[in-house]
Amino acid sequence: MKYQLRLPFYLAWQYIHRGKKWAIALTLVLLATAFVNLLFISSLFNGVIDGSNKQIINTMSGNIYITSKNGKDFIGNTKQAVKQIKQIEGVEGVSAETQVQGRLKYSGITVSGQILAVNPEASKTVVNIADKIVEGAYLKPNDTNKIIIGCQIAGGEGVANNAFSFKGAKVGEEVQLMTDKGVKTFVIKGIFDTKFINSDLRAFITEKSYKTINPNYNPDSSTTIIIKTNQKYNQDELVDKIKALDIDGEVYTWQEAAGLMKSVSESFLSINVIVSFVGIVIAAVTVFIVIYVDILNKRRQIGILRAIGIRSYIIVLSYVILSSVYALGGVLLGTVVFHFGLVPYFQAHPFEIPITDVVLVIGAKDYIARAESLIWVSIFSGLIPSIIVVRAKMLDAILGK
Amino acid sequence: MEDCVIQTNSIHKIYKTGGLDTHALKGVSLKINKGEFVIITGRNGSGKSTLMHQLALLDKPDKGQVIINNQDTSRMGEVQKTKLRLLNLGYIFQEYALIAELTALENVILPAMMHESGRLAKKRAIGLLKKVGLAGKYNRLPPQLSGGEQQKVAIARSLINSPSIIFADEPTANLDTVASKDIMEIFKTLNQRDNITIVMVTHEPEELAYATRHITVSDGRLK
Image 1 (cartoon, rainbow over the protein chains, first blue to last red):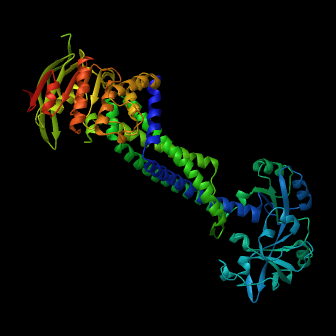
Image 2: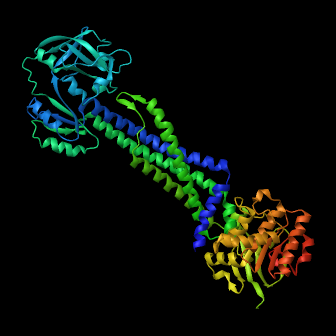
Image 3: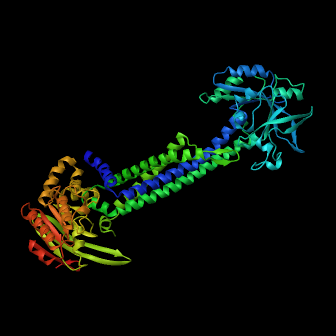
């Protein structure tokens, strides 16, 4: 029996070692293509989801988000809350924001975007607006009549929201901020472009500027506190720790604050599942046809093996091993093409969509699941036709009938 | 009865093609004794190859019995038949039927690897290849050998498990006169020196001289 068990491996090795190199190469290329296709579609959707999630975290809400309690306009004792939150291990940055009720006017055009009063230095520790300035400069804490606006407010050529924007406001030009406390003129200090429309429909002024508009403004109260956390720490545990501080506000994770983007992400996830399933079916059919044709071409050889006394299970096993080797080779080749070809290419040339620049993202779990799918499909693709052939009449196989 | 290695009892074989029944064997009964060199001849479509396929357990008769070495094969399962083919019967096909991915030596060793290590079988395989005149060509792949040489490899392969019976289906049909004579001489030696029973189908009248018995098949019956 031990000799018999060695035989399938021996035969499979000889098929590979001495088989037609171009045929083996073609099979590997086809399997690698099927695998890359499985990875590509999924990683593209993951890229959209991951990209939009990062945009929400990095440009808007941070990882954790605190709003005022129901029935209240502000979070009380903001300074104390910020100080306490900063002391929690795993918190990397905290910033309090105050929403300014008002509209911006430029050259006779009025735009009602979200205007936030922030401490620019604190804001930098949570969101990356400072890094997304495409014209001009970011705010400084002592700026009193400077404003930075998102590119969707500034408008101009190539801006998605141009129709409802200032249609080409430039750095150095003036805009009026109209609030119920009066009108104040600001100079556009910078224009930012995060490539996330929701984020680019906002404008920022300093807390000091806001104080000049609203003398009743209390810096110890804010409408939101945004928090950046270290990815190594469990987000839910950090939320619990923040909740335990008994802050005068409601604590949410960024997912809960994602709003519309949450349902967009969920839709993409559902589409990804469907597209991945279709991809696996296509890969299965491709792999099955490739291996089936390969085995059918060896029908006579299988007949000869049976005629000279080689047991059927050994023949079947040899083709299962051969198919597994093809699958592993395809997975390996596909991995090389994907990780060293497609991923770097898309990092250099991402797909540009209005919410983010999409790069290819695949998690280890997804990768393993797809590799496993391909290997199982290949095993069945080797198993089924070889069983069919060994069950066929031996003489028909030998005579090629 | 002791000497009888093959016995058939009224075997019938019917091929069904496109709703048409072809009665290829019509109750053939025969006995072949140990050490015989039997040559089966007949016209195309006479049933001679069909008869040999039944004797060699490559096919199953629709009716009747094939008894090999006193074992009724009609009662055997596929695993038992495979074992019988492996250990007691050797085959030589018209088209050589070698495994293209294996060298001459590996082709010969293959059936032995079912029950022993390749290393042990290798020594015997080299001896057999020398015996059929292929010394020094052990590592050649089938396409690197002539037709006659490939057939010699097939003969060596059929001998690796020391069978008591060798079946050869038109083994010289694709060979030139010199190669054909070579092959027939090998069969003669195996039969006369090693007392191996040989059952061979041929179209070549000059090969009848090697036979100890000549069977003619005509219209599915023995003449």
